[in-house]
Image 1: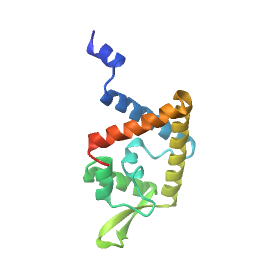
Image 2: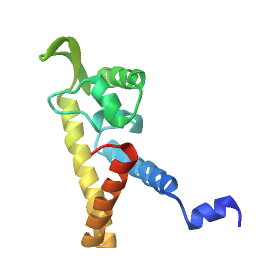
Image 3: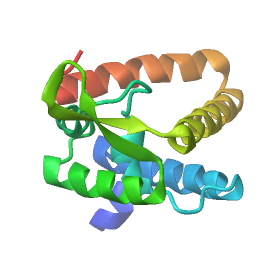
Image 4: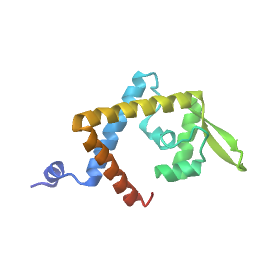
Length: 150
């Protein structure tokens, strides 16, 4: 059996995770585009998915998303230009900056959360509520173990 056939029949965690991620991103950003958000791209998720409504430090966004600080800085620059976030002084440390969502950014976060909740509900209906809840519980444990987070 060729490797590609074997991986199709018994995909490993990496293949399953990447298929799920890329498909989820494609559907999410397609739906967001239909909702009037055509400029945000999957790469912007490294910032927007982890951004607190009150604002977050770029270093925290980098750590949470697994991206380099330079990558996050570039993404923040793009999102500033698109009007989704702005940089503000951090009240806890005037030397630091917070990345804060604008009104447009907050609206995007609400839309994105709603679309993802809808997608999850569709999966739960397809495989059963209990099975999906157990899948999420176990997948969270695997992700925590893999990343060394809790």
